[in-house]
Length: 337
Image 1 (tube, rainbow, N blue to C red):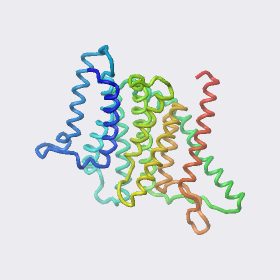
Image 2 (cartoon, rainbow, N blue to C red; image 1 turned 135 degrees about the vertical axis):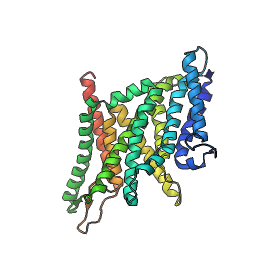
Image 3 (tube, one colour; image 1 turned 90 degrees about the vertical axis):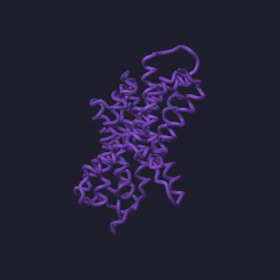
Image 4 (cartoon, rainbow, N blue to C red; image 1 turned 180 degrees about the vertical axis):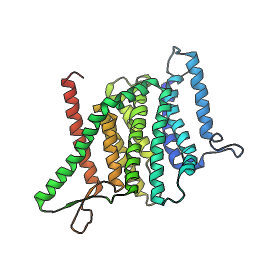
């Protein structure tokens, strides 16, 4: 079955919007009172229908004609909706079964974020089966040979940030001190959980989804290389922002948050496209998470109060990350990579 390109774009954008809204409003999804919510929801019905259509398209094979074959759209649509079905339907009951009853709210939050990161990584292994090409491109950017260069590049950007800010403080006579978070099991859980979650989100958003959209773009009529890149970057960044929103008053805060997270998604996506290394982006992403949650070092005054907003650290780190990324790409070109 083939559909006109405008309809293909409409289906793709509608599914992206649905996936983003489900994170916030999944409790309003219609459900059947007679079966388990896992299989009795409208979301499961959409996934099941897509699986049937995809199986039929795979059996029929390529078909000539105008427009876009629906079988080409099925992988990205399934990646979007199956991930939501897993995270909405499976994470909560699994967490209830394994979470310790004596944990505090802060501990439960840290445990759940770690579980969500592990669950998303496992989901990526499943979702990759829908598009072997996107899975292959993602694995190429995350294979073990990329770990050390990615970790070193991310560490250089972070240490460079502290070095520049510390040197500026000393030159201006500020006398700022670098304060470290209090050690303890909760700190370890937050740090490990956020690192795992950052890696999983990079593998999903900047790996599978972005690579699949880039692969699909020519079939949707985008022939230029730059257009294909933006067609992969923009939707994944908007989806990334929608899924990290906290809806509620004051209403200016969600808008500010949306702009920040969408821009962050764009910049992380650009880092991946320039370096072809997901670990680099994941390292920067994890450090930003640690910073915003208060488990990364901060410069403080003599009274122990933070002296710089988080945005100062984030902006400087991203600037350094891009300097490193383009130096990396230039070196790779000289070597013929």
